[in-house]
Image 1 (cartoon, one colour):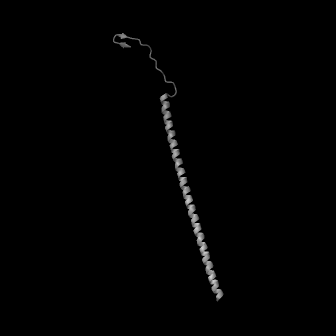
Image 2 (tube, one colour; image 1 turned 120 degrees about the horizontal axis):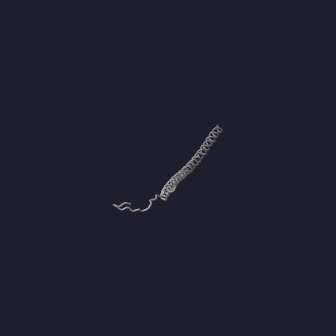
Image 3 (cartoon, one colour; image 1 turned 45 degrees about the vertical axis):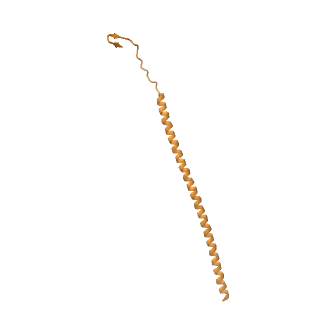
Amino acid sequence: MRVGNLTFDLGYVEYQQQEPGLSLIQIIVIAVIVGAVCLIAAIVVIVVIARVVRSKRRVDREYVRLLKELTDLEARVRDQCKQGDRHIEHLLQHHHHHLSVV
């Protein structure tokens, strides 16, 4: 080192070379990024599963509702058929009675 007319010898300057590999800060940054990506992926999976479950429940409710409507319709048709049969039977008896009287 030189100050004015004076010269001082301070020693040798050595440069430290960085070892191959990652520094602590780089490892922390990578860990935070990987953690964030995993968290986002987990949230997406949970949301998709929740929607699938909700959709399945809605389909199940719709199926039960349609099954009940079909059962009710079947009962009404059965009742109407019975009433129709009774009406036809009544008409046949009435006509048979008129034919046997004549």
